[in-house]
Amino acid sequence: EYEIGTTVTIQVEQPDKPSITLEGKVGDNLRKTLLANKDIELYRGLKKKLGNCGGGGQCGFCAVEFKDDSESGVWGERSEYEDTRIGRKAGTEGHRLACMNNIVGPA
Image (tube, rainbow, N blue to C red; front, side):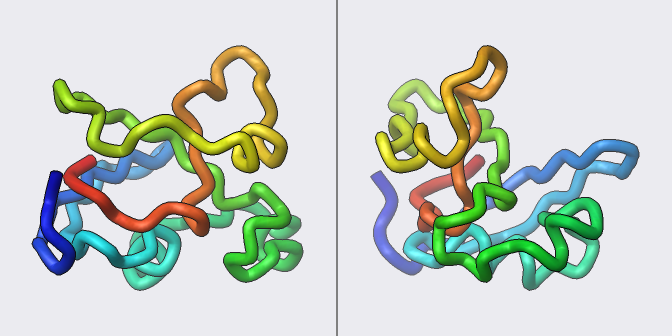
């Protein structure tokens, strides 16, 4: 477990773009951290850009896939609420809402 304020590295992979490594602080909101980096397109497409809920956890448009390779699974399981927003379809098991998650460790 990482202490609040600890700087950690987050690897971001996007379709048709090179990977980006950024730093974030444990305790900071993941959505805000991603949006602060202008090279990361969290909301892809006009519908998502204009129709997102602004971080309120209502739209599901900020869903990102987590790849937590740590032995401890530092990011943990997604919540039941996230299940209702993202759904339980095959292939979405590792997806989480960026707006509903604070940084807890490297990703």
